[in-house]
Length: 192
Length: 192
DNA sequence: AATGGTAGACAGACTTGTCTGAATACCTCG
DNA sequence: CGAGGTATTCAGACAAGTCTGTCTACCATT
Image 1 (tube, chains in turn brown, green, cyan, blue):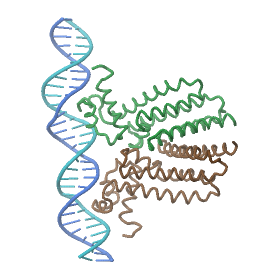
Image 2 (cartoon, helix red, strand yellow):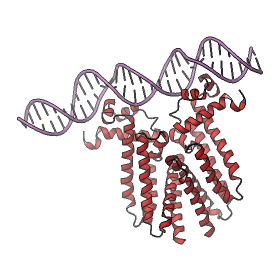
Image 3 (spheres, chains in turn brown, green, blue, red):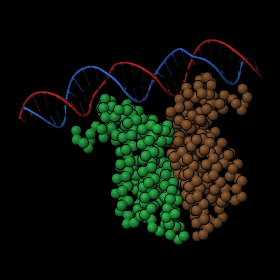
Image 4 (tube, chains in turn purple, red, orange, green):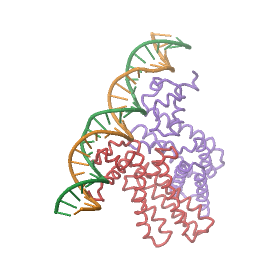
């Protein structure tokens, strides 16, 4: 088999589909290997345990998200436009996964026990998200330095709230509301 | 046994503690009966299945939340104060559960399969939450009728985002940020 | 020979739910 | 008050199925 359809990647993409649609805990190893069409020994050859597969799933998910996001967002001409475009790309992203929500959050909710490899990976991914917004808001020159943290926090809250509610209601309205709220928030700041 | 320490309620309160700290899927019937100090037959006498226990758990959680919230919130003198107080009570609530987040959201994430009793109950509880904010924002007379829906949606997004992030980061800062964002949002509308 | 893969039996632990059989509490009616 | 019937609770064995992970034995390509 070629590298782009290697067994390892087949396993990850099948696991991704199942974890997103059914949840991590409700997806068994046996279902993954059956639907991926690989042997159990092959799975355990590439991943020492289900948890390690879970970590690889989160890492892959994060890479894909960042790549797609950056490609879409960087077409915005300034930081303000870019920030709005994050929310618009999020809509595409959520639609693609059939409103599966945020994989990091879902893992954290399914496996709340702190300190495990999987939990740590999810927290790290969430942190990357937070820093991304902090960085982008930092580039908004019409916001005074003393207020940038507040704005970044609010944007992050709206992003997480929107993602969560899109998952719950299975449509894009909450994310569009979140985008509108961010636009309104920035408009308020240009006036004030 | 008296009604206030009935076996049924002991089971629910033990299940609540375990579901919140470990998650629904990762808590077995056997652990619940052991820690509650009741016989397995007693659990199945009161609840036909684990899922029914889960539904009772969500209902009880919702009742307690609404009672506590209303008691705290109704000390506010007007709708604006009340809205802020919801976020402040949420901080107390989250602290009490050791940052377990929103039980409805967690169930929806752990059991994404639509149509089950438990999933339906969780969606219904979330809907109650949404309507509560809609009602409260509707009473804000300084907001034009045409903008009330937008404001209510934003408030709901901040509430869900704050709850989620408090769960992730295990501290109250996100909820306090959410409260501040709501105050700012309302201030913006009094000016505009 | 080494590498990466297949098929599937198997171990051992865990899951929910059922069942037996007895004991206790409560409530109503005489 | 007392008796009988009903509702509730107990302890725990058991069924039937699930789960992760191990292992053997074999195959194909390099």
